[in-house]
Image 1 (cartoon, rainbow, N blue to C red):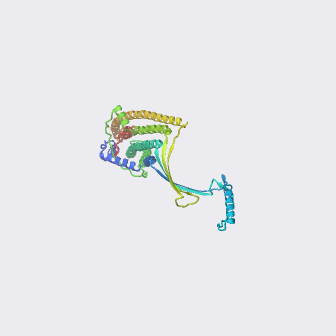
Image 2 (image 1 turned 90 degrees about the horizontal axis):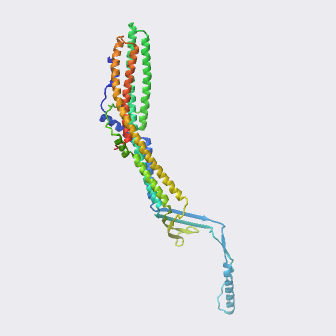
Image 3 (image 1 turned 90 degrees about the vertical axis):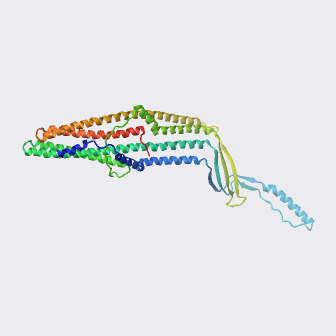
Length: 462
């Protein structure tokens, strides 16, 4: 009987869910919150939305830009400037007057003749031209910028809540993964202990045959049971490895990283009534706050589209240099200040843009109502799942006690050749299944608690 005692150690009530166990789990949760890749991606999205808000606020500030242009042109429109037609008669008369005076007046000075000039053709485009200026633009009145800033603020808050929502989901997933690993580990221990029992059973069967108290088929049957449990043991090892890999994945660690074990005892959980639980979820779930920010963004989008018929006013100041080449002097530089108003008086598409914004807001309202229904249903389902899981533990404990007593009696009789192989196999199978069911029930209860806490938003972040 001492040899089969390890099999029953799993039936002993383990220590309560102690502070040590909670400390281990909290450390793993903190590690996941610091290292989980998906959470880091969510935080990057939030950082991006924060920068978008800063960009929207910066649009209220003046902007400074450098605008430089150097042009080379040939051809184009031209106009005739009749300078010859205007000045040649004058020059001819002056030449005639000077000639007469020089002939009649000996002391009249000698003046060169004025030349005859051609009419000039002037191109509108100069062959070379440059304009280089600094421009300051300061929006004085622009409702589009104001509403855009409000929308960006709403979306930034909503993105921040997305991070918080994922954190809660990650906490739940870490807890469930940890309890699944503990469950797989306990199942592995169960089959290892069962295998030891069956190895002892094979030795007992061989002893009975050697002493001519049983036929050789008893040995074959015992060995077949042993092989069957070895197969179950391999499956349990696989389940443990998979559970460990997923848990380490959540913590962004190597899949084979060691996981610290802890033992738990299912404790009764103080459960709220269904109505209290629903109210708790409606108060705590960040999804509702997020949808409120989406609604505010939709309302600001409606206002942005409606305000397109309000004039915009900008203050513009230019300072620079102009000319056919680059030179710095009083004749080249210039400064100009302007107040520019733009007014979109008639725009046929504006009505449809406003209507689209109203429809988008209605969609968010419907999504909010749907979320209320979904979370309310989740609370009801989690409430009953948790209650059923708690009751299943008591039933599983009773089943284990009954199966243990039955196996002790059958095992004693079997060793004394007072019970056949069929009775022994049946008793052993019932006990193993009962123990496995208790393991599953205990850890599934902890998993249901994690689900319940997530749905109600009960986890408190530091």
